[in-house]
Amino acid sequence: MKIFRIGIFVLILLLSFQIKSQNFSWGVKSGVIYGTPYTKPEKGSSGTLGLGPHIGIFAEFKFNDKLSFQPQIIYSRKNGTYKTLISGDTIYKQIIMNDTFYIPTYYKGNVDGKFTNNYLDFPLLTKYKLKNNFSLLFGPQVSYLLKGGNKGNADVEVGENYSKIYDEPFDISDKINRWDYSIVIGNNYETKNRINFDVNFSFGLRSIFINNYEIDGTVRNIYLSGSIGYRFK
Image (cartoon, rainbow, N blue to C red):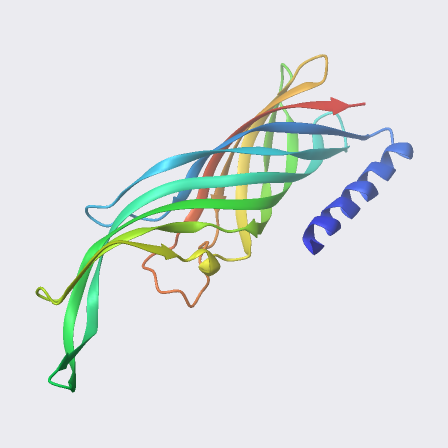
């Protein structure tokens, strides 16, 4: 996959600086990510937060005792479930005595779905050291969708007893944007043995759905992640 090869190339390039710079270090990290794609819910709608894994690597360029730059390459699975009501106008096709009629009517129902989106995240974080080995992390994040998943079932009623469909499967995974952009803020604690603990919050800046997909509101990736890692000298 092209984007994965680019990520590995960038990593090798970053690691090559370790030979030349005393202000460079790198490490590995792994943990869990918890949240959901979110928009303001309609009345009667609900959802649950999803838990998934994340794992990756990071580099650190130290400018001084307080400030450093920490780019990362993270694989993450961003899950979540939702139940939402749907309604609108439609045209119902009905054939009566070999004549075809197109009847303006309405539809209503509910949708029960699940997100399972696999991303390659590229956080570009500024790290500001506070005291007692605590640091503040903040910066932008670019994410590339490796594999999108938005599937579920729908119960739909068309018109007044025209048609009823139950447990109709749907799959709109192809409607998810390939790229996503977020703002990340969090904190880091590093022990004397260079073991790191991170807690980060990411807030999506755009809808996860493509522009021409008809959906009300902006559905953003909103997630909280926790990880443990090790920084090599």
